Length: 436
Image (cartoon, rainbow, N blue to C red; front, side, top):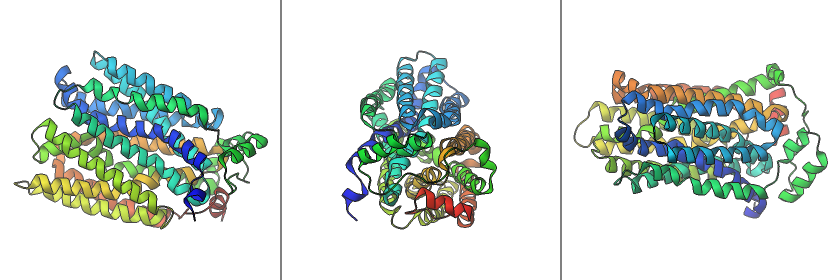
């Protein structure tokens, strides 16, 4: 199958424009790990204040996720425009912040934008993508998140010697302004137009996207939210929530948010050396996401999930051992274990969790169902991130990561028993599966 057929140019362009919201997701998620070292010095922050500054973004993410259902009413494209304006406002607030309270406000608002983007971006891409390449295209969401994480680490390292944390935040203005401009040139999704009875516009959008494979669902589109209680909807709804929660409670964002702190504990003494070590994490994250993007429509969703989670569990066990027998060489062992962990997460839970929840829900309530699944994701993210340093004090670093390894084993069992394969299936075929 040719690349041209898999990726109609306008579909690819529209997907990348939407995925700039994911780049900003990754950037703002990770840039705080480098910035907080210098913010803590300037504002004399305690451990709890640092934890709260980091986790405030997650509170915003929770509310952003809850508002994700607005895309069922406003449309996917207009919601992306609104989200981009939120990113712009939040970034300006962070750059100009002169107090801890203003920093918290900026982080809260950027979190709201991230929460909204975490629903709208994969949803938009899934609804404009041909079924045979939907996995690869929706995976651009996670690829741009990982690129955003890597770029944030590089920017943080660039300013690590001067401690200019405001410039770390300011860099994100470039992708925000690019996205705002390019959003003028992408279409509304055919599926959303159909859900509003605008069939002629939906068909026009399909022609504009140059998609030969039908993407307009034949399923009923006027669904009520209480239809989540129907057996054919309840099962995929609970599976989506489950996989969203496991993506977070297996510990990934403890690495992203606290990587410099972890490396300092592992033997990297200075801010510069610990931030540089995180660049390797960002790099492997991008590389393995590209591997997952290549494989997701070849070997399927289940294989990537099961293989990735098994690798994560093993890596976390080894990481725990590295800290348990801490001594000379711990730095090398810890960084190798963390790289392996991130390398297993990226093509598995990293890509597939967002893809699954964009595929399995019925059209009429897809935005709202994704909103609840993503809300569960952000609540889990908040809980894990807010308690991580406390967990380290109680269990030690090694003990904390062994706990996450146990959760990975539980996640493997859950995927094995519950998560179906959706590779290459149309939305209608996926819904027919649940109805059986």
